[in-house]
Image 1 (cartoon, rainbow, N blue to C red):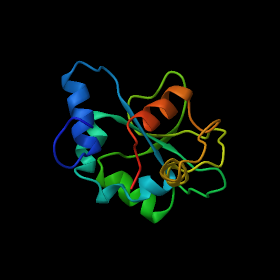
Image 2: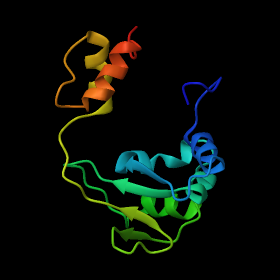
Image 3: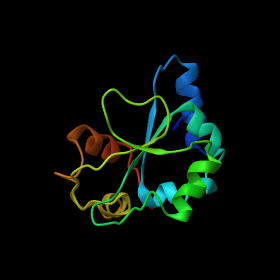
Image 4: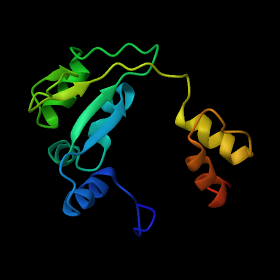
Length: 138
């Protein structure tokens, strides 16, 4: 994504990974992001190229039976939500409830921009990468 000119879209990145030989891809999104997925570039194609996994944020109430969630599900070409299971069912958008820390991407970007510590919030290699490339700086 960083080497590609112009805007970066998830669907284009997933397509490039597929073309590069990736067999099975998963795109993880929070529940709020899933409900906004129709604003993404070519969301139905993204849902065909990769398995969508919704991970509700701790403390948020995601209702997969809500009108909005079902509308998104239909418009991206799926018929159902499925709970994570082994083996994975061949279709449907996965819902995975995972233990999480109260860390947001916007908080991480703000901390990086302000030069504050990212320790215990990201792996050391990611912190080093962000610092070396001065990402998120104004």
